[in-house]
Amino acid sequence: MEINQSGIDLVKKFEGSRLNAYLDSVNVPTIGYGATFYENGNKVKIGDKISQQRADELLTYHLNLFAKGITPLITSKVNSNQFSALVSFAYNLGVGNLKNSTLLKKVNANPNDTSIRDEFIKWNRAGGNVLAGLTRRRNAEADLYFNV
Image (cartoon, rainbow, N blue to C red; front, top):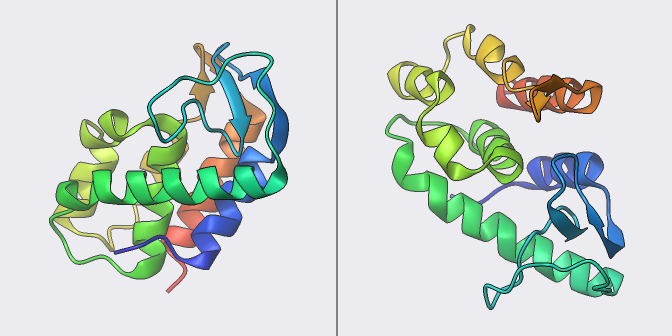
């Protein structure tokens, strides 16, 4: 499966595009739509600059990478919106966090379990602090997940 346009739009909205490298909320050098590394594996460094076209290319690369990373973890039949919400989640928090989450356990047990919404919402912290932006993002991911 691939992330759909609604999922791409969600990631773009919450990541925003920044063409000059910056430190994210946990002080990791980041560029474009939240990229922390390039296709060759090199990490983003403060001082790096890219074009909007390059930001879009990096986003496509990373979303495909994350989609491939989570595909083997999902053992239930999910629809395009459900998959795309999970890609957005993993893009923001990492495949490892999704892999070990109660969110994934519930998705695999019953992808239509309404308590899955609560599992998205639990992941609204960075550096131990609740962030309003993460709360909004988790709500948007849950909304996409349950938008049939």
